[in-house]
Length: 285
Length: 285
DNA sequence: AAAACAAATCATTTGAATTGATACTTTACT
DNA sequence: AGTAAAGTATCAATTCAAATGATTTGTTTT
Image 1: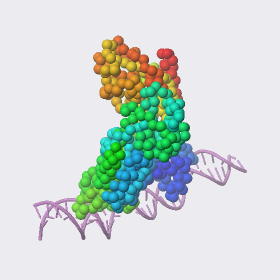
Image 2 (image 1 turned 30 degrees about the vertical axis):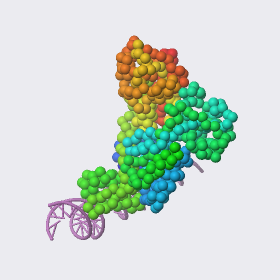
Image 3 (image 1 turned 135 degrees about the horizontal axis):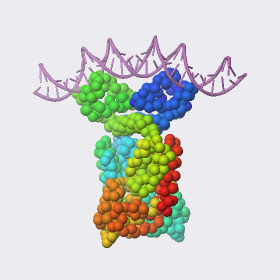
Image 4 (image 1 turned 180 degrees about the vertical axis):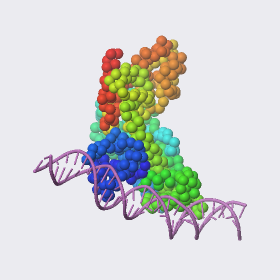
């Protein structure tokens, strides 16, 4: 099976016919007919029902269409990922949860810049689950996420233990307010919900929000409450308006660390980076 | 990019050289050299470092290797999935959680057999998450899983609400015993753990076990406790030795239903099947 | 220095995919 | 019914990209 065949097949389905597909693919009709026929021979399956004029997708075809889409998607990803490696030589692509980026990255990045002056640094913030996927796909060289992460291809080095606290505005009662959280996949989300359950509170409708300062701003004006690392709240520009409540250890303590592919390039820079994190964490303690 | 190129690339990496790869692929050395060179041109990346005699995988190559493996894996899956469709004409492939299979399937299958006499029935038991994957990959026509399932390509029809109860052996204290559960991905697992947390109990080390009767057997001799649908326990051959404790609604009630691809073939048989389930559930109530 | 091994290069060949023309089938219109 | 239009299948001729086999270049090993 070759990808040309799958590209052709997909075009026929999407254009609704062989002639239309041939135009889209800049080739002639007989060519498309032939490629489809060979694909059918190879798979030993009838992909289309021939109806004199026009085709109708057969059951096998529907199945193949799903897989063809996956493969062609993967082909595009492959090409872009491999090209990126070249472009990202001398580049360190770092991912981090937004809270982590705000709290720990700045000083650590300074250390990396000092030790590896030629290295360009890129930082992308996202949720833990998305970051894990991006590291696995070589889209990022490393990422700072809530742990523990257990995966055969990934190394997880625990660096700090983050203390989550409950935050709400002065003069409001969090029990009555909705939970405000990052979008789907946020590692603190499950903690917040588990804690609520444990307290016997129904979980109030959770709002989702994209940015850290945005969440704290909403909370400061009394729109809701959230669970967030203590130091993030203390550093925030809204700190004056916010009330911090401690949370039992089993819900509050989150091991947080760096993940990277076990067979990583740029090991030296990664070491500098993680050392920078632990150094700055110790200074703050 | 074509799959021959990726197959060649993979062979070179795995055999550790172009000559060895050429032998494996039943072709000549210059051929392999050419395919690799063209792949490098197309991707605009150096995949190997040439060291006079022998090659060394370059960073871009490492990335490509990961993706090549994924694609070639997907190619095999594609071929087998498409071939299966042909073979499985006149076949209904059903997946179910083991508990569900024991409890609800038998009578429903009888109904299907009566209405569609020619249809061959296959049943595979697995965990909810695995079953979802298999339905998405067209490996199964439908599956009975713990809901709710929210996915753009899947239809989830809720059929029954399962009541989970705590089970342990007469004369034992479940608080002191380990939790016994199905393997990773079991939908009742998170329930059991959430409930334990809510009660303020530490979650005792969970044991994992493959079969339903196996779990109940272990529990009957006092090895642990578990969370399981009430009717399964009542029907079990070990029922006499087991003690049932009710669990608060928010942890015990599990919406359970049938999933299938929105664009499913064999709609008629699926309807018969789900009707059979609801009919038998009503009879039991 | 010679032998052995591995990869790159290149002229030549081969064959699988493409082309272009033609035949066939259904649908739409008069 | 008759005809035009639109779509697909088939097939001989062609083409071009990939495969071949021999040669060259470079690196280890002895």
